[in-house]
Length: 365
Image: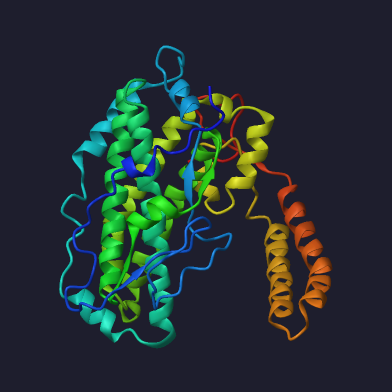
């Protein structure tokens, strides 16, 4: 078994057809080619590439041979094929098949967005489109690789890639309202891929989907209650859109329950505390331990980290020479690491799925 097999030769990966991603009202749309560590763009562009940071969307690959073993029905007796069949029927229903239909409001709203808000919103569309497209690529490859091992799970992955492609296309059409378009074909071939072992793919993707659900539904509810802030009609689609994210998260929850070795040992408890800060209540339904985010001391630590981070930003924006900046950063970064470690080591809350809990969970939903 190879330690890692990257996603199949990218020339063979099918890039979803999103229709004409350039604005129909202008022939001078700018094609955005986000930065890549391995490929340089030959065509000049007036749009600045997204800055690579810890929060920038990434493309992922994994050990597909291990994935095939994990979902082999002849090897893994924990696979609940009845649950997977039920989930497959949910995905086949395709509740949002006709949901993502644009109207004239989009272009009008885009033209009215000016100044810093316009720039921030374009970055939001770029990052969101890249994140959705990243999901499409990973799910598409998993659907292809698992066809022989577990056709039901493979088909679910393929249907999830359908959803992600639809989302990415809708966001890219939004960019066309600003006379921009992401060059998704370029991203497929040129962007650097981050390798995660299957266990971490499960953790991170489950969280990503659940975070997406809460992100979209929270924005939708806020703007419904405060329509004066509805600056662009894409937010009106978030109520149904978030259900796609929720279904994806439920599928990954079922996948993890089929791999109890990823949830039931001391290492799982440590990793789950690391991964599940953002959606603590939701992750408590499946992860074996979650951070006690309601603890006042935990919140005080977060406030201190914000203050320390502001000091770090101030050093970076100062007029000092690089050497002096780096020296000043050392104690600040040390203080930030100390607070992070202290928050991580706070006593967690025992939780997890009641399907295989060996204790009475403190948090059950």
